Structures are given as structure tokens and as C-alpha cells.
Figure (cartoon, rainbow, N blue to C red):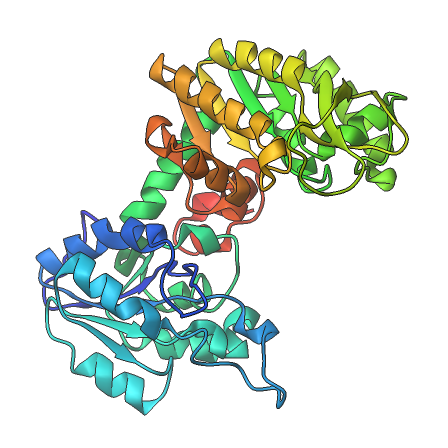
Length: 405
């Protein structure tokens, strides 16, 4: 961005304004909007005008009885006032993404002004990566910037295909994507040791590629959440009614063998807090994780597991955390996740580098009130995991060939 001239230029920017809305369609959390501000402010300051494209929600999966998209519910009109207040500059809105109305509104933009186009996913051409749709967006502007890291792993029209219609010198990443890439590289390129990865969540299948990639890079992998019980089952443990992916038991054995050969320690939770049903308990019992009663299920890591995790995290110099340690939505089973959040914050204060990636992990660190005490929180959980796994990132590859897979 620093090398581009924006004065009197129209700049098309793909942002990620997929913000949560309450039942009254009011913004609950504007983190993603704020994340785009550095890029927007720079272009406005340099005398450019800005056209913003984004999706909001999944309108294609929520239609009325006649099969029509609920346009008002998923309209980007709901972000206009918030962006205008944050930037203190004129922000206009056009209730379409293509057509003569959009062309006219774009042409009427003055330097220092912003125009938000309607939700790109109101058109099926967006997710199909339709070239005609992408070209109609490209024709609106002189420069294209992708600053939507959260969708950079999607080959959609507005995230990657549109870049094909701009010369290399007229397309680039925004400051948010650059920040995401700089922080990801702190994990991928010569990380400080010991490097500890904390992986939670429900399923091993969601983390297969990530574990395989991390095994050769990290010193220790701390496993929590429902995925831990598939590993215990692979070791011949008794996990009661705990969540187990039966078809992934052999895979869990293979991953543990790979870790052993790479001299990487996989730490499973020694004990678990349990319940006989998927519901909150104020004082849940604790059992060894490989000896859970038949009628019980593990819903959080126990006190011994918390203490072990704290010890390992306290010695780390690089930390990557993805996924909660238990069902932290239930107060009685939130202790493990919140304890890990505190341990990561404490280690960061002592000089470790910490990256939080993944929706539930971000929610947990925010819930703990420790968001400002970790090094970096990724705005795109799925995109960050794909990047770390070495997967395809079409939104990056369309601008920088180094990301082609």
C-alpha cells in the first residue's frame, strides 16, 4: 500500500464486515470494522475515494417461504452509521452490488468519501467465483485492495477473482492482511523456542492438517476439549459417554506416532470434569480422563490438567492457541479455558509471543477480559488455520504468487 498513489483514484477494497447483529439488527461487536480502519484512513488521507465490498452472514441459507433472500436482515446498510462515526467522513450506501445504480454511485464519489456496496452474497455469482460478476466490480475502480483476511481462503468473486482484472501494480493487500501475515510468520518462520501449541475444540478431524504441520515445528502440543477423548480411546482408555470420533481413532494413533518420531510431546488432560448429560453443573466431579464412568462425559479439563498446562505454558517463548478446553459456555465447565487464557496472558507478560486464532478461542480470551494481554488475536479463524496448515489461500495468491499452492 505504501508504494501506491491514491490521489484522485477510486479504490475497491474487499473488507470483512461480517459483524454479529442482535435481534434488532444492531451491531454487537464492531471489531472487524475497526480492524479495517488503518487502511481506510490512509487512502482517505491520501485523497482517494473508496468502494467497499463485503458479505454479511449466510443469506443464501436463510430465505423466506417464497425462497427469497431476507435482504434487510443481511444488508450492509446496518454498518453504515458505525463506520461513519468511526471514520468521521462521508459514508454512502448503494443497495446493490452491480448494475447501473452502482456504476452511477461509484462515479459520483468524491475524494475522501466512502461507498459501501450491498452484501456480495445476495448474488450466487459471488461464491461461484463468477468472472463476469468479478469484472463488474473491477470496472468500478482503479486499484484493488484485499483487506479481508477472514475470507482469504475462499475463491469467491470479490475475494480473489476480481484481482485478475487489475495489473500487478494496481492491486495489493491492506494493512490488516499485512498484519495477519506478519504475525503468522512469527509461528512459521524461526519461532522462538520452546514453542507450545494449545489445541482444543470438539473434533480431531477439524485439526488433522494443523497437527500434522505443527508436529515438526512445535516442542509441545497441549490437547483439550472433546477432541482429547478420541486420543484417549486410541490409547485404550475408558471415556464413558464422552465425544469420540470413532472413525478417527486410528488417525489419532498415527498422529501420536508422528509426534513421537518428531520428538514433540503431546500432552493430554490427566483429568476431566464430567457430567451425566450435556448441561451445566455448579460443582462437577473430576475423574481420570482415561477412566470416566460409563454414564458420564468429559466436558472440561480437570484441576491436574490445568496445573500441567500452566507449567508448560509458563516456560513457552512462542504460543499458538486454537480451540477451548471445554464447554466454556457453561460456567461450571469454563475453568479450563479461562485458566489457559490467564496462563497465556501471564506468559506473554513475561516475554512470550502469543497468537490466538479461531472463533471460540477469541471468544474465550475476550470473555476472560485478557484480550489486551496477548500478542495478537487473528480476525480470521478459518483463514489463519488454513494458512498455518499450508492450505490454499486464493485471496492471497491472487495478489502474491508466493501464496499459490
